[in-house]
Image: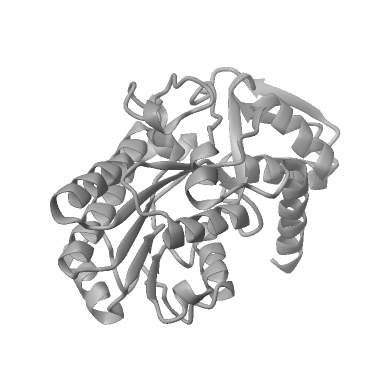
Length: 314
């Protein structure tokens, strides 16, 4: 609690899905001076806006969560934007934070930085053993460059920048937009929509054979804040639950929890994405005592309940 008592903190992306959870976790820890920059006021792809943000906020710590993100479809549609925007935001924030002599920079990367065929469970040392899965490589590589920059700046300038690798996130407040949502909110929306319209089937991208690991958003926020408090080393650290599930198993689980009893059609003409994803989470436990708490089924129930309430309000 004392660590955050008098700290001034900027949380980029703090109004987003993960960001809101991180801000809530910081407040719980006693951090009273948190600035959440909005893109209308600070376009972080522009260096002048980054400089202005750091001057206005004068932070001790920056937690960089802001990202342009989406599912497989969005990554295929906007590869240039996903590369440029994510790279420019991160690179300029780290450079300007260094120049201002900030106490610490926390860069939140992505599981998409790992090579397509990484040995399961993914260990941090495997990050450079191949090229990322093609559909999200531009995004994954843009975020991965922040690890290179963090390590280079620590080596040359002694700048305390750390890099975290959260697995796929989910939970209340997630993005349910059909164009840009990730797999869990997309499946929840499909099942609930189909049920409400009396439709007898839903279509799901891919074969269902690919596997994923999911981390509840509040767990991710807790891990990020713990790392900001306790971790001060150059190596990337995985944040995850360590539990792997196939897309097919996930679809049937979501269907059961939403009450959808129709047919599930796997569209094999659509890509699966990375074949498998499951993290070795032992380094996070060792370095700053983080372990995920939320079980997947329980987290899905909470997410489905939140989405149903949102639909009623809308």
